[in-house]
Image (tube, rainbow, N blue to C red; front, side, top):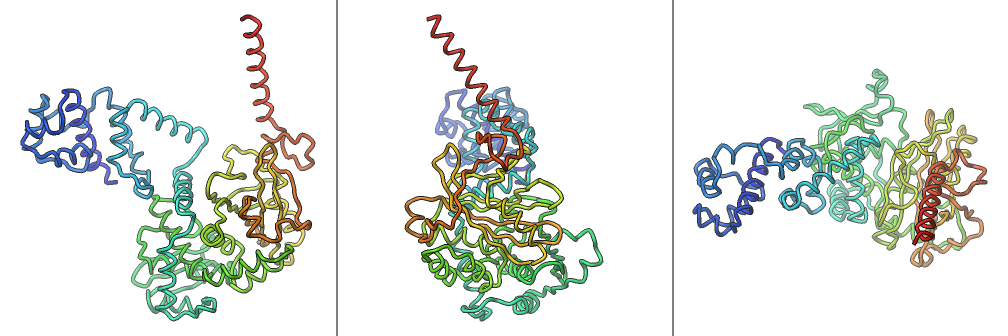
Length: 493
């Protein structure tokens, strides 16, 4: 939002609407008194139009206030909280248009009950500050909500990936190669790919790629990346160029988040890359064959990775788009964990939940994630076999304590030099999943009771417990106190 211009329009519109309402005037009454059309006055009150000085003077006269008061940013006590919110630029950070909202509708709500709604928003901000939630975390949360609204499947990007393949005559039955994509990037978009710069800049060691725009644009790739990761980086850059996504980050991974538009466009380019590298028609057919197996066969997942020459993350991320669309499996989650062997800390670095916030999900409270999750137990095997460099596969039926929810969780792990990672996808076990996945009841699949974090878990004798159930104990104490008070009240009645 262009802060100053938009804020001036919005505050002006709010003042006109409040003054008119206070006088008991309808829009028609104000139109009659000013000679300004009802439709134009309506646009003014919604903050979409700002009248010329001559019309502003006429409106001020009709409302019984001075010209200076009407054009100032000063609001009365009732609307002051709204003005503070507008001038703080908080509302400009909300990606309202991506959720079917516009600022005028939000302003209508604020104008109707400004004190209560402003207090509510300020409360949310206080909570965010208390839990140390940064703006970028808000943007990523908004992106996850955006993905959920669309079941993480985007027809228009799928079609663009198909058009790209046809335009550049990519083999529909093959996998685009690194050399092929590098050639297209250079010949069509004048972007050269190189890896030499990373060795001269140690500050870049934790990044996967850097885009340098200019007359001779360059895509710098980290030489430590696998061939699959380098190919994905090329496909992602082609997504930015082909989809003409100009507001974008120039690094992968994130260094600094500038706006929600950057986050959204980065997602679109990455989605394009997945659609380009893993053809949906072929992959859907392969997944159908995988699910049709009467027994759990982990080698088939590895064969899929080999067939599509892809990484564990790209494969499972792609499934989060195709399973809802083509298999009706909409209640799922996707998690990426990282772990350094020297510590006992696990970091959830990426997550997605479709059709509700499923367990597990990110904890910003420094609690200990349940050590029974296959996402975490697989790390033990990764660290024992790190020297092999091979991708490891895990599967588990996770039944949540004190809940009816049970998930089939597939996990993949690939050892890395400095930090190991696991990628997992969890599918809610329901009638639809039972009909789709033939090997669901294979006795070879381990079933475990799990929870969210150790601090909230009632499994007192859990051998994997990493912390005492302090939060659960506090909740139980609160319930006992309230029950004792109710008992005393009944005795005195």
